[in-house]
Amino acid sequence: MRKAAYICLSFIFIGCSKSPVPKDILTVDKMEKVVYDLMQVDEYLNSFAIKDSLDDIKKKRSIFYEQVFRLHNTNRKEFYTSYKYYQQHPDIQKILFDSLYENAGRRKTMPPRITPIKPGKIK
Image (tube, rainbow, N blue to C red; front, side, top):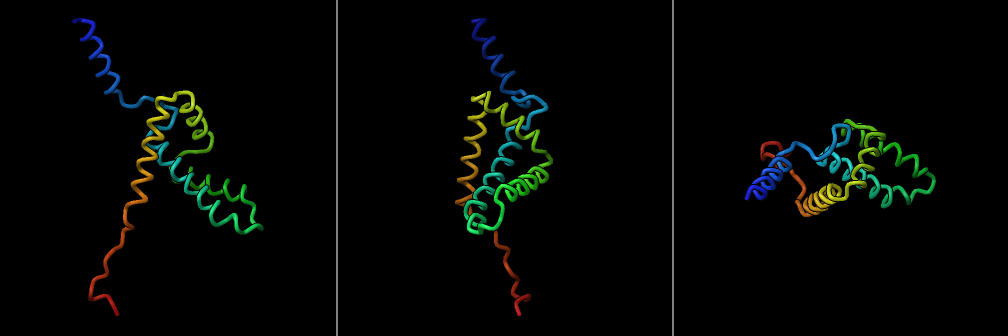
């Protein structure tokens, strides 16, 4: 009986911990947002920019990636350090990619936000 109580308390303490990752690693939530935006960059480059053969795709990708990192207040080194950490911890990586998959699917099915025009403003 005592063993069961210790096991339950262990799960409670583990479950209530703030973050399963060290402080120098991006949190799962932040990592998810960064990875999603990087995927959007790749999708854009593969769909549109690749048709323009005069542009250097690697250079454009690097520029767009840096913009994504700045948007999320991180940098390339911190992102790739975090990415390696998640690769070495498949249990946490699974949580990250499951969440990413769910949110990406949700964003595709959500209708775009359209602000209504007030009748008095139409000319």
